[in-house]
Figure 1: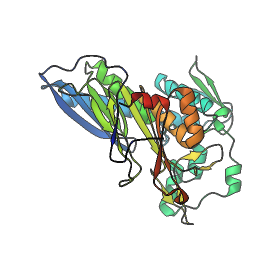
Figure 2: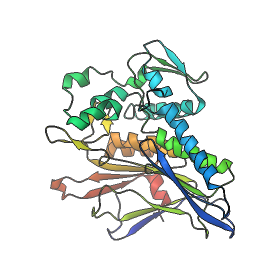
Figure 3: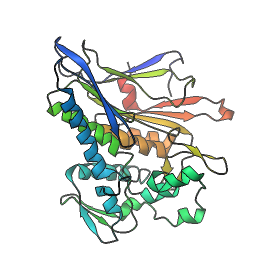
Figure 4: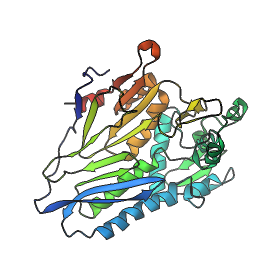
Length: 347
């Protein structure tokens, strides 16, 4: 639990500082665009005459490539083609897709299915994802208990993944949904593209997931404030220096809506219970070297809840900040839970 007064600001810094700031002849440039139903932005340090249209196009190509491979909204994507396979059929995956699936299945195993990259059918049943959007627009009715019970338990186990051959086989009714990790991968991929272009000083953001490399002009790191569940929450600010680090946040306040009974439903579903989470976690932020891993781990911790989530963060050495909503009996407000790895970053 945090011991800082509500008016204080917590500062998180990397354990190591590497590289040198850009020269005085470099300036700050900004790019932005749209992808994955959200926006992307890049802030980078480079020469004054840097060819920005070419960089803009390069970043957009990276995002478009991730969508073409891993979007469950695009009927022609590699992921959607896999989801249409009959049991026993298989598909060879592109290298990027294979990398993301490897990470997703690792997190699924480590969290005992709290994060499940093959829970797409469950997501659609509860009105999230492309199948469920129509239900939301018309006023969503929560699925019957029998509908939930009929879904496979831990559908990620119905995948056969031959990593060496990059071939994925459908064994049952698994429907991939990588929305909780693909966006983070896209952040990493854009960052790598900028590094390959000789631009080591940059901040990449896609839909709230961020990665910072190098320094801002003047030698400062890329400072960002961790997301909070709501304004006026009474929480003190947590400021992070993104220098070779990424951060992702999962929250129960994102994409929420009320069903026909007036119940507030979070988009965060527990694949094990097949229902939205109800344990009181408002948000989880994970700081990691990779935005992909930060993205996936934050979802797993969010599903697990305060106690089990913190236990997993400790076991995996994750730098995580968990915000729990206090009940009315506890006086309301929020409780902060910091993992040891996050405390190590605090100054």
